[in-house]
Length: 85
Image 1 (cartoon, rainbow, N blue to C red):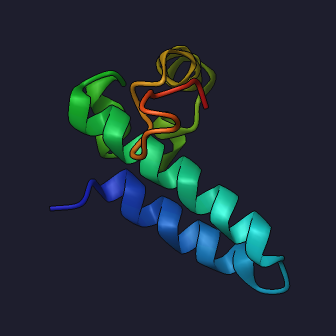
Image 2 (image 1 turned 30 degrees about the vertical axis):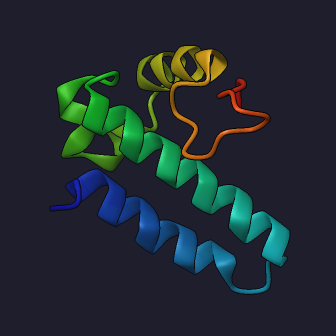
């Protein structure tokens, strides 16, 4: 079952996607996917699962950035490894 905050983020992204490039849409989709993985792994605060403002607040995004720097949020290997995103 998707997290309510991710569902709200998808709705926000779809509104932004109108008139944006495919590259930008891919980038936003990648961030959405990484945020979902971070929520699933318990890297982000629990409240971030339920509320979009909490998902996008500074404290939560700092946790996300730290996890992304380790490569743990990557869904694909690059050269057999998970480099930072």
